[in-house]
Image (cartoon, rainbow, N blue to C red; front, top):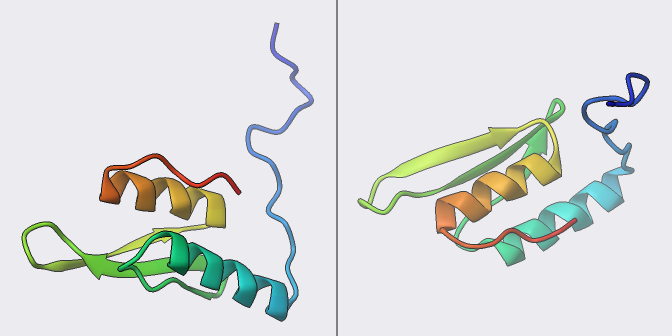
Length: 80
């Protein structure tokens, strides 16, 4: 039986500006050629498409963005 008191998704971790900047640099290094940034509670990752175009991935958490980045690059994700 499911635990009805457990949240479906864990609460986002609150970061200081420096810790968020460190996390963003780490994600960018793990998923080149994407350039990751954060604004107003959303993570953004503009990058290339296989056909030579470009797209921007967005997610509310760093973990969700990493899942999208891994899928876009066709590889296993980095655990946060």
